Amino acid sequence: MMQNEGRLSIIRRQRLPVIEQYLLRAASLRSTTVPLVSVVTSTRKVHLPSSIQPLIAAVARWSYCEPDVLPPDVGFVEPLLRRRLSSLAKMSLGVAYSCAHDVPDLRIVYASRHGELARTTMMLESLASGEDLSPTQFSMSVLNASAGLFSILRKNTAPATAISAGCASFGYGLLEACLQQLENPGQSVLYVYADEPVPEVYGTTGLPGSNAHAVGLLLTPKAETRIACAIAAHDDGASDEAQSRAFLRCLDAGQATWSEAGKRWSWMLCS
Image 1: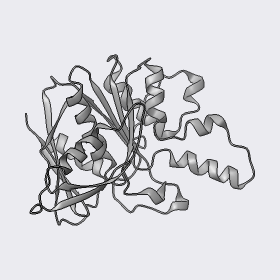
Image 2: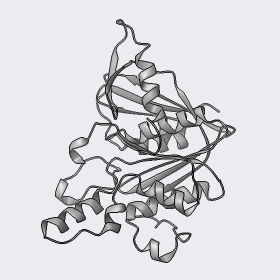
Image 3: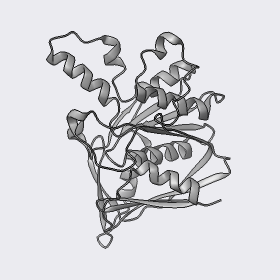
């Protein structure tokens, strides 16, 4: 998983994610006079125009969880399953329930930079010790585990998407959620981003604010809070904070930017 940093890897039930179709459409508009941004998707590498028309995230509700400050409330999960949840799954389900506990039939987009790496590492250590792997542990270690659990708990049969895209996982996940909202205007979209520090064996990312946290957003077409989301080529140096933290600053201050090598992400309240 650590070796795949920078790739946009995607798990979806039905077809290619909307974001990949959008990136490919954007690539078809490029000209030789416009700087390009390279993005590796699940199936191919595409080159984007230096700027893309902003997408609007219509946010009806949002939730934030930092378990080191306040443990997530997962009382809605039955005790037997609750004991099997990782810390990542608990905060993911906590913000998901806070945003969408009363919303039936909604699409889910889940994003995480490292996913269930702590559980996966524990499984690898068990293998190295000659121990058998638990099927339950394995099933809970995949990237879309939390999205699947929430769908099962809420008896939700709508499509779910899971995205990991390195340090920009939050941004690409939000773009996917916005595009799904545009594609299906009559259906709400729940977006959840969650991440936690990698196990010590992998070292550290060195980013401030990279402690465990989760963000949940409920997107509905009639929401009053509307955030313009844009990405453009830029020569800024890489930001020294987690991308999700920058987005939270937008919710508080009205606008925020975040940069990685060659790209600048920006969010701005437009109502």
